[in-house]
Image (cartoon, one colour):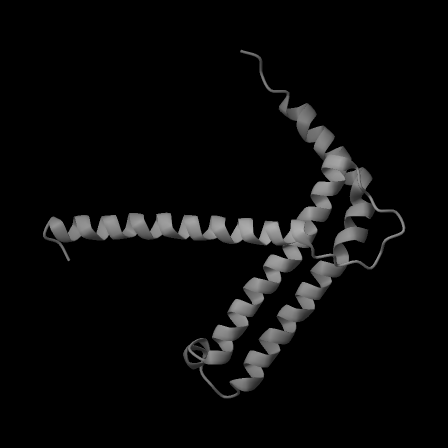
Length: 144
């Protein structure tokens, strides 16, 4: 059996990253900066609406619940834009010269969000099934 040239593969990957660093930064900075700013704004809004509340009270508030799901949605959007941009560089060499301010969200990015959501739901269902099966087994054996 032929061995995989792991050091050559890692070396080529690192060299690709080094030579593409400017393009990677240029094409992904805006979605990531927007995500960071939105995350900070959501955290500030939750803290402001729950002034004086304990951490437990804050975690049970509607604003915390809303901010958490808004953050998940924003992460899905921003990271799908970044994933599509990086994959286009890697697979097609599409470096988009001259483009510095772009936050495209189209069909491809939407499919990434849907794919991630479906994958998350499947993994969550599998974990729930394992825990339900384990719980049923414990009860059937007379424990708990």
